[in-house]
Amino acid sequence: MEFRYEIIVVGGGHAGCEAAYAAAKMGARTLLITMDMTKLAQMSCNPAMGGIAKGQIIREIDALGGMSGLITDRAMVQFRMLNRSKGPAMWSPRAQCDRMRFSIEWRKALESTENLFIWQEQATGLIIENDRVRGVETEFGTRFKADAVILTNGTFLNGLMHVGFRNITGGRAGDSASWGLSEQLAGLGFKVERMKTGTSARIDGRTINFNVLTEQAGDDEGRSFSFINTNWRIKEKRNCFITYTNEEVHQELRKGLEFSPLFQGKIKGRGPRYCPSIEDKIVTFKDKNAHQLFIEPEGLDTIEYYVNGFASSLPLEAQLKALRKVPGLESVEIFRPGYAIEYDFFQPTQIKPTLETKKIEKLYFAGQINGTTGYEEAAAQGIMAGINSVLQLRGKEELIFRRDEAYIGVLIDDLVTKGVDEPYRMFTSRAEYRILLRQDNADERLTRKGYELGLAGKERMEILETKEEITKEILSVLENTSISPDKINGFLEKTGTSQIKQKVKAISIAARPQVSVKEILQFTERGEALIIKAGDRVTEITESAEIKIKYEGYIQREKIIAEKIQRLEAVKIPDDIKYNELLSISTEARQKLERIKPRTIGQAGRISGVSPSDLNILLMYMGR
Image (cartoon, rainbow, N blue to C red; front, side, top):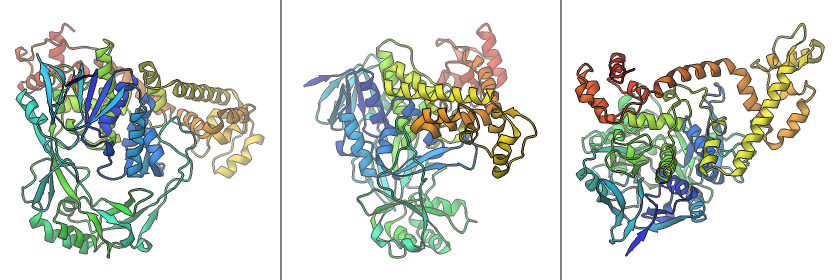
């Protein structure tokens, strides 16, 4: 029997769920194939969303009309805005979530989405004709035909899990691996490589001595990931806890190193540098006597906790002995040990910026299959693959974000231009235009695009337009209102900033770090009315105005730099250019240009090994 869809998404993780939702929301008849419908968008590692740079990505997905932000709000048990002591470019929202609720909410969202259908079975092969994908085959021989296919297989492709020298096949604990697709794609000429990631033991909360741990509460203020939710309040909160390893813990870990699959050559895949296992830490950072651990709740209705910072593939006995030397965990019992997992991925230089593969038309890769790590990075790729697959089928212009438009643009450009030699994780340091790509202005940057696509609804546009309108009014009031010394000096003295000697514009006082826009509005004629007009969104709107005032110089400088760089992005490189004939370009540059096939001079300049002189030769060849 054969079934027909426009788009098929293979894999029900964070990338797959966003891809399927986006495609269906944009009107395409979409099928999501998953091995287990009860584990959609499963939090296989720690039960949290967001964090440094990752929080910005979730805000961007939400601004476009994706679901990750809304689902996070519905499932979160704690919210924190990280890096508040630094500038707004570094502010990053992070939420602790109820892991089971997160998956349930995603299933509810998908099942209530028009045009979206779900099939539970393992996909084992692609139907390909004349270098174009035509559908998917499953292990029971079911054939699903489609105009485009998005692969989001996560860690399941030939997955192999390690605990000590024991290893079993699987995509994650309790789930079987996926077979067939890697072999087929390798036969079609795709370069398949191996990567490794890991996770920590899950422990029994009844056996934790919380009295000796440092409690880590969330923020008191109402905050959310989704721009739709105003002054979001968590119904039931759960706190995290902090403890540290010590020399006794490290001693137990060292005893297990001779049985470590990581250090004894049993694991061949490359692991994440910025999220190392605990055994990696004690070897790499020998001089450190302690490493911070976060004890994180897995949900509201469970006693299960996740030990963030203690990922390990050591034997069970070594893990348990070491954990019981950690303050507060002396009597701990575990539900399951930490483990490492190896899996297949495909070098992302084999895909276009749309995430379509270069070798097979209408076939898209998204998520860990492209060498990334993290729920947020996967979800970002998922929504972009879903969007671009529909745009291509409809004959519309593709959606590719520049590096100054979105963290999502930075992520995808890094992948397709540079490739990966370890699991890719997003950091604020990867973005050149951090002050432009703030979490607070993701809606200003992306919601109109999402609305035009049919992803972001009318409600989102109205919220954005109201925010922009009131922010503009606030700035106008502050620019056009003069405040006298007798009216403001008492307030300035209380806030610890210098008093004024003559009338000054309110905006110059609002630019001071000690003064908030909301406070200074109280000294203007229309200020109170604007605060009332902002209503529930007053904090969000006044904060937006404040950032624009206090960081105006930095924002304008980055915009000027971005505009200059954009000139190179505007110079398109012909698809049929024969780099091997350009003998004046270095051999390394020719090889990399031929392999990656950059779309613009700007992208070509970001390829390692391509020098400015190589670019000049390329420009001359193109008649520029």
